[in-house]
Amino acid sequence: MGITMEQLAEMFIDAYLEDAEALGIEKADHHPRATHHMKEIIQLIETLMEKGLAYQVEGDVYFDTTAFPQYGRLSQQNLEELESGARIEVDERKKNSLDFALWKGAKEGEPSWESPWGKGRPGWHIECSAMSMKYLGETLDIHAGGPDLVFPHHENEAAQSQGATGKPFARYWMHVGYLNIDKQKMSKSLGNILTVREMRRKIDPQVIRFFMLSAHYRSPINFNFELLEQAKGGLERLTTMLSSLEESLERANGISLEDRDLKMMEAVEEYKEKFIHSMDDDFNTADALAALFELTREANIYIKEDKINARVIQNILKTFRELGGVLGLFAEQTKEVLAPDIEELIQKRQEARKNKDWPKADRIRDQLLSDGIILEDTPQGVRWKRKS
RNA sequence: GGCGACAUAGCCAAGUGGUAAGGCAGAGGACUGCAAAUCCUUUAUCCCCGGUUCAAAUCCGGGUGUCGCCUCCA
Image 1 (cartoon, rainbow, N blue to C red):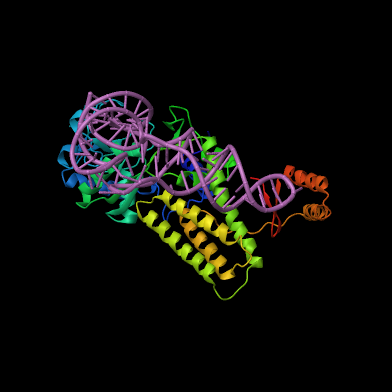
Image 2 (tube, rainbow, N blue to C red):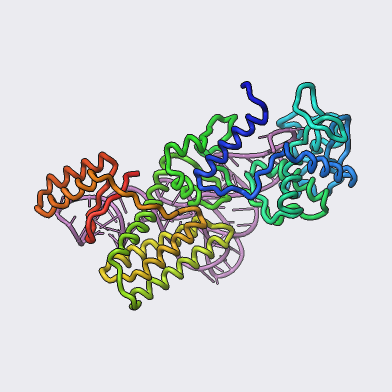
């Protein structure tokens, strides 16, 4: 490709960060790279060797799984029953087939780094231990990952880390469900791959987020465009309510709160608590979302009446944005200003309607629709939104 | 073969002992010039069989089905 290994890595890191940002995923405090942490990695391996948990074979270093009694506990694997060599060839030089590489001696032409065991590269688990402990401490609060990583990766990570520090590596392990395509794991070998890059060209990233949140994180979620359409419908219901509320502010008044207002305030509090309770319960986002839908219904009923209070409306909006913010939804958007010619058309239609010239009014409405503008005639006047 | 997860309405999905949230779609109604949005009403032998219990979607046993993991992908 005519570029260096570093440049290639850089390209993919940038692409990843761009996609993550589009989905509203916040950057981590640190995005460390294994190649910048050789010192820490080597130190960790040395510690394991000093403790008798690792041994050297020629230029390689292996973790001795029999020296670490808890090995296999995280993944609840019966070590005797593991199908040896199911996926890869067993290295005959290892003491036990389960032992895994901490350091691999370099073969001719491979990228390599200096180490006490000669030129080589880290084994594929050790960098996670070295870097996460460097930045987050010896015990992590939460370690998350895909279920396919439980064994061997997380098992190995935990063994290395706990072996070295004598402390638990993670307080909680959170393993998410797969994002499946046609009920099967998305994987390169199956070829059923959808990239975020591709998706976000076709679908509003907010819809993707909402879709993911509609099921519990531990459940596998099946992906297809029909389900995404369903999600879109649901999300629209919520966002429509928000814009209705914002519009209603213009006609809202009243300083003193009457019974109806107070009831609405109470409802807001009630659903907020329900939301928080659901999230506290192992991030039950589907249940939390239900609270938002119920609040939405209450809010829609509230603004149906003529007498509405601005403080109440503001409170609903504030609460909704606050809770939505937890999920990365409903960020406040600047109100789009329509082009003058479109405004003019809307005015013309209003006149036509006043004169009960329905064919003309409908013609203008259809024309705007084909331009992607949806008109809605509400009791409080006409309003528009973009077709999504 | 070993280990594990899951099975709830047409679709998605929450609910881990007290009699089925919520959303999408559909049907009927209200509102509307008509729509849209919104509101109201409406849709479930909780995979099957057996057991425990006053009470089971939830607990136990046995099936069936789907999916995942099984040692240098990280």
